[in-house]
Amino acid sequence: MPVTSQCRICSGTVQEFIHFGRQPLSDAFLEPDADRDEEFFFQLATGVCDTCRMVQLMEEVPRERMFHADYPYHSSGSSVMREHFEGLAKRFLSTELTGADPFVVELGCNDGIMLKAVAEAGVRHLGVEPSSGVADLAADKGIRVRKDFFQRSTAEDIHATDGPADVIYAANTLCHIPYMESILDGVTTLLGPQGVFVFEDPYLGDIVEKTSFDQIYDEHFFLFSARSVREMAARNGLELVDVERIPVHGGEVRYTLARKGARTPTAAVAELVAEEDARGLSDLATLEAFGANVRKIRDDLVALLRTVRAEGKTVVAYGATAKSATVANFCGLGPDLVSFVCDTTPAKQHMLTPGTHIPVRPPESFSAPYPDYALLFAWNHADEIMAKEQEFREHGGRWILYVPEVHVV
Ligand code: SAM
Ligand code: TMP
Ligand code: ZN
Image 1 (cartoon, rainbow, N blue to C red):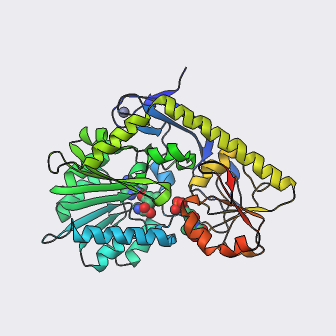
Image 2: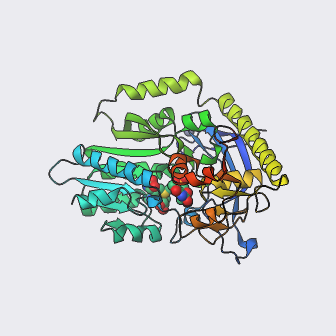
Image 3: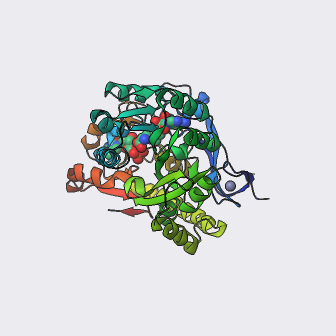
């Protein structure tokens, strides 16, 4: 019997196409002396809705377990992402935010990586961020932040206080939120008549093309496509009016929604939907083939690591990403195969990775001494990391990557 659940967008039937087994929360790093019996696990599996084609998790993790005061992801850790968001802020400031007293609301503003430039320009803004630790970092930058989950009631409250928004924006946040009906109700409450709701998230098309299965973890509830987002918008009084493929985080799409009829959809929308349909992106057969590719990557990666370890080579990992929780736990990578993971995020350092309990160390540990192999968990930041770690290669070190297939460079 195929495993099914109910679609969070349209109540259709979601049919499972890949199961990763029992997984921990991807950002739940443990203190070295933590009681390991207390660690939280859930069943990580993904399916596709047979009606609206939305790809989504089969099981939902309670939001307070993921987003809280100690949420360890700090957006500003990457210089490439700082430039990315500064560029977007400037674009908003010169396009959507040129009226008399413009107002922009960001969902999941994290440490203020995007709103910093908006605040510096003196434009009215509000970040909505439930993880109070990162929200405090944003407030320290002079950003106005509400420590809260965005949902219908939050939107009503903001609208009553601040009036309508010209831009509602969310990066790597909307796909984290299963309760989409409440979110889109909130958006239609808060958005001005000509306003736009812009969000960018990992793109199903890139995930399938690159077999980047590590984009699937507790926090990534939805894997969006142009087709599923267009359908989701239409069911909620909105319209998908633009799409833009962007290279960050391994391949994302920036979607622009407006009130139905408020703006004319660009040709890019119909083109991307047609391209997805032509390749059968949301067909069960395509997604099951993706599942087979994932299992091959797991087998190849485990075989490679066992071989080099048997040869007495040293292996460390680079970037204690949330994504790597799926890779490490699905492949069974523990400290026997990977000695430690180095990461720039203070909140992750001197902790253990979720489920697999690999120690996390500061980046200085990487060169003391350099390992023979470095498993690049943060492969989406490959250019930035390889550029700053050139000496590792010069010392004879090699990078191991597993997207789109296992290879050594
Ligand atoms: N926008 C940043 C970026 O792109 O780097 C942060 C992305 S981070 C992966 C996701 C953020 O969404 C977290 O900071 C989390 O606390 C926040 N979040 C989760 N649920 C939310 C909700 N209902 N409303 C607003 N923010 C939420
Ligand atoms: P992300 O893939 O979700 O953006 O997470 C990237 C992780 O990698 C984050 O924990 C910070 C870490 N990192 C480094 O340790 N060094 C780096 O140069 C970069 C860009 C990220
Ligand atoms: Zn559906």
